[in-house]
Every structure is written in structure tokens, then in C-alpha cells.
Length: 273
Image 1 (cartoon, one colour):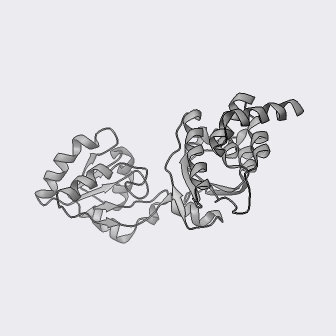
Image 2 (cartoon, rainbow, N blue to C red):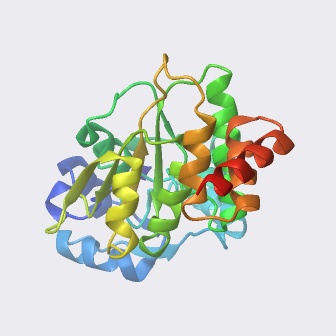
Image 3 (cartoon, rainbow, N blue to C red):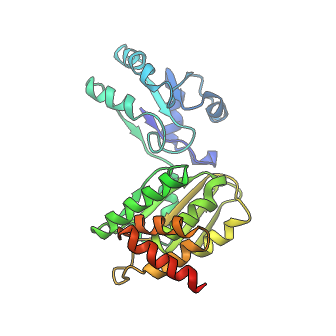
């Protein structure tokens, strides 16, 4: 049983989820210490066992054996809906393959809540988890998305991000996607909940000098259908924070244009000052 848990406010746990956790024989937790507070608050007495990225494969056989023995097993993540940017997919796939029943209890989800608060088009949307932590890989990933957009993708894009990488991510978004409308949602359902909306450049500037705290979701709106590729605008945005060579590489990856062509234009713009 996949049980969604609150993303911040404990009052968001549904009555069904509360009952299911209280009646479980075993609760699989991404972090047992983190989940202990929630389970204590609702009076759940079940045994807890860890199931996370590093032990999931090893835990599949024992968990399937417990299910086959009739045990009531609940899977929760640290916050929100299990499997969405959290462990559990390999276990669920194995349970389905073994013809064991898999059920789910819906509840909080940070990506969906951020989407409906963002003011950006709510559908279609594409949730992408966390972007690569290293800048080169992140720019390549953004470039692949731009290529997909040129092929017809038009959706609001959603990521989670760590606070200490937010400013760098927003700068790369600006270089790759241009100055689109975007939003940064922070600490959703918690005391210091905040949603900032505006062009990517404004959000990048806002967080450049003041790194935020807490859980963060970043959203970028779809491309304007009547907005052609603006090579000079993208290059100027990239040149504001990168060398000519790096700016050309970033924009070439984002637009799919030949790197030599982009590099030549970047040199011209840099010379103009």
C-alpha cells in the first residue's frame, strides 16, 4: 500500500492514510527517523523498516515474502506521494510482476501544489524531478528539453531543487529557455510558505545574493508559440554570467544551432560590449 504523507503540515494527512498506517504490520520508510515524528503523532505502532535508494533492491525479496504471508505493508516517503522523486518504483514493479495487490492512498504532492499556485498553464505539465547537480550535465538536460520543444513539446516544466543550487539553476534556465514566465515555490504548506512569480531573470536576480532555505519547486512556463528563437537575446543573457566559450556552448545546446555559428555571434556581441 502506497500511502501519501504531508509535505509539511501534519494536518494534511488524510483520515484514510491515518487509519492505514495505524493498521499496518510494517511501515517501509525512506528514513525511519524522519517518519518517527509523524507516526508518533498519529499513534501508529507498526514496526518500521528503511527502504531507500541504496537498499531497495536488497529489500524487494523480503518485502514480497511478507506480502505473500499476508502482512499488511505500507510504503511512505519522507514527504508527499511515494515513488515521485522518491524510492519505491522497483519494489512496486516487482510486486506487480509477482501478481500481488498494490493499492494507493492519494494525498499531498509538492509538484502539483506548486503548479496550481504558480499562475502558469496547469496542463499539460512535465515533472522532471531534480535537475543534474553539475552545471554541464544540467545545461545538457535543459538543451535536450529545448530540442523537444522545437519538435513540438509545449508544457509547463517542473523541477525540485536544493536551496544551495537554486541560483545556479535559475541562471542556467535563463540561458537555456530565455526570459519566460516562471515561479519558485518554497516551504509549501509550512509556516514560511512562499511563491514568487515572474520572469526567469527576475527570479534569478532575487535569489542570486540571498540563497533560500527549505524545500523548493521550480516551474517554467511553456514557450510562446509566436516567439521565434532569439539568438542574440539568449547569448546576451548567457554572456552576463559566462565566458564567450561557455555562453556559446550553452546557447548552442539550447537552440540546436551549430556551435561555430553561435560562437562567432557570441564573439561579435562580446566585442560590442
